[in-house]
Image (cartoon, rainbow, N blue to C red; front, side, top):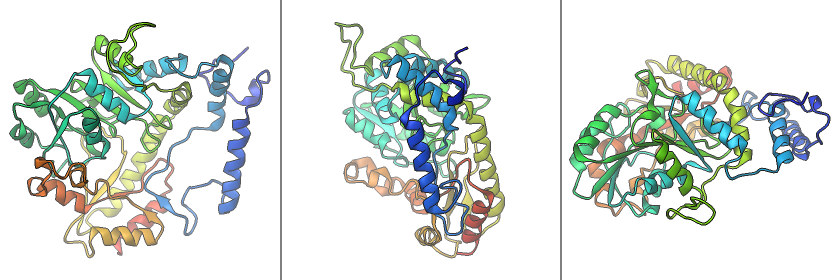
Length: 413
């Protein structure tokens, strides 16, 4: 009996299908890389002197991906909402506990389409403390970012600052669930309701995050996810928009396909944001292993917290809600023996590649620094956090001995 393409199966179990060159090539390259490093599994970071990066993409067993690749080769359906694409949308909506999800080729495109779907113009209040794609999407959409400061505890938008920044030109709020920490969604919803504003959450970090027993993705008018290779759940490249209304889902689906309603009708100025069948198929395999991946991240998070507890000058961001352990940021304070950048360099000399997420601030980049809201004087918390933050390596397979190595280096700078 032919196996269902969504069930795990080894190539030997399907002898009637031709061998795919990608299988042999990937295994050969993996082995050559392992031989070059003199190790059994490439990139674990457990060998003496091996570099340790801030993240490492989670990959499921290759043999589980093979039958889905074979099905793509058999059907020759590569894109345009194929069966794997439809199946992943359904399974993700069920897994995340959200009404509707629309898949995209990446999160930046998804964010641009989300802004277009809501017919926005004018000003949008957002955070300077994020990856630059958050504000880039606004600029690509002809919208003006208005930066407001963040809360020092969560590093998310400060609701009090949001309300103070509203003008007659304000049309929406674009908060970020930074590091997967839920924003103050209730306060933001109340502000939006009082002023008639839309809310689009940049939820790139927030896959699987829950707030008060429900998915944080159900808040706001729309939420945008990232499935980039570095994220908790990845499809190589990818993204998605979460929405509550089936009519909005239909509009989003049309806008990501050039605005086509049917073969001869175009409803609006769309673009090409479709996720391919290859990415969707990979996502289906990844979803089988998401609980294992999260458990691995949780263990690393717990080890860092235990090892760094009480260390003068080092603050670990407190977890809020049911998180996904996407990042492990520390804040290097004035009581620490050396500055943040000196610690960054010291770790790097030891082969530990931490990252200063998010430094510089978006508002410091040339494209934004001339905006009135970009002045650092008006963003004191954001500026301080950008100068102190350091994200430590975290990923599911990060060995406990490597975590200990990082902790010892921070304890003895």
